[in-house]
Image (cartoon, rainbow, N blue to C red):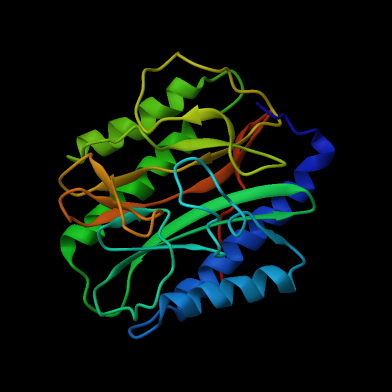
Length: 258
C-alpha cells in the first residue's frame, strides 16, 4: 500500500517527526561509557509514553523476526547494523552505536536512525562510515521531490556509498510510512535513475542508508532479530523521514538546532 497524506495531515507528521528527533538526541546525550542498552530502551519507553505516543516496535512481528520485538528502540552496536535487540550490555569507550526509533503520534508514524561513537575514542574508520551514511542520506533527500522517481533516490544514495568504497546490501532499505511503519514503496540503497514509483506531494518516505565496512552480507544473531555483518566488521546507519511537498522534500526528523 502507498499512502498519500492530505495537506491537513502534514502538521501531525511534523509533530511525530519532531518527537522522534528529540528522543534520539536525548538518548545520544545520555549514552556514555557504561550506559546499559536496557537503560536506553527504558528511557525511550518513558519518553514515548510521556508524549502520549505509541511504539511501533513493541508488538512488531514481521516474517524476518522471531516473535514480537518486545522493546521500544533498536540498539545496534559495532558489527550489528539493523534491528538490534536491546540486551544487558554496558557501552564501552569507542563503541559504534546505532539507534533506530519509530513511533506513532496522532495516527502518523515517523522513523529515524542515528549512528555515533561512544566516549572519547574515535576510530577514523568508524567516523568515515558514519559520515558516508549521512552524506548518502543527504544525497537521497536532495534527489526527492514531486516528479522524481524512487530510482532517483536510490541512485543518489548508492552513488555516494559506492564512491566511498562500500558495498551496498539491497535486502533492507527505505520505505514508505504513514498510518503504519512499513509501507510501499521500497527504497533500495542503490538503483537506476528514472525508474520506479513517481513521487507525489503527501508521500512520506523513510530513507535509510546503512553499510558494513568490508561486506554486503548479513547474518542473523541468535536472538532472532539483530542483523550483523557476516565478517564481524563495523557498521553504520542513518535515517530520516521526509515528506514530499510541492516544493521538494521536507525533513521531518531533523533535530532542533540549539
